Length: 182
Image (cartoon, rainbow, N blue to C red; front, side):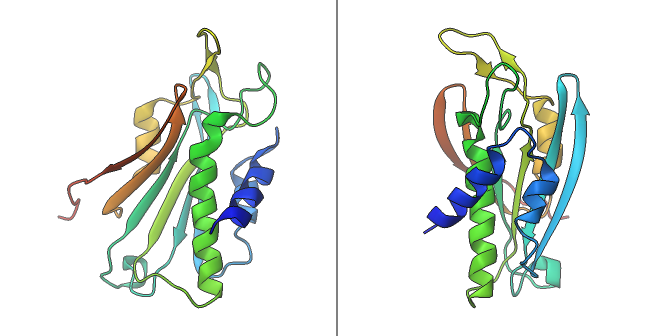
């Protein structure tokens, strides 16, 4: 159950000051996790892309051959400040993805380690732009979809679970992708 991790992540993300570094701090106590943060500026603002790797016992990051799972938290932004205050429903993808990473990291400290690596990626933007729409504005993103794909999808991911809540509809997408092996 990930209730504890979800609440921890929600609390961290529900801030006008949240950024990739704040998310990185959530994983400071977990030795078998690697995190990178990359700030990217687009035409409509900037966002911090976060990549969390939970290393498996036989994962490729350790020279093993176990499959690698990708989990992508898709969103426009965590918040839409200044037009809307507080965390927005669009943040659900990022919250779910980071909570999953936090749960997997915690499981490792309790002796439950997956064989393969899990790569979790998302972006953190507390002040994403919005697009006019009735009855409620739609969330937009500071960067375009190609930029998101370039930063969130990695060649190591052999399967991807994409979590999103966009354009007023919730969805979870599972799609098999061709292997990117040479």
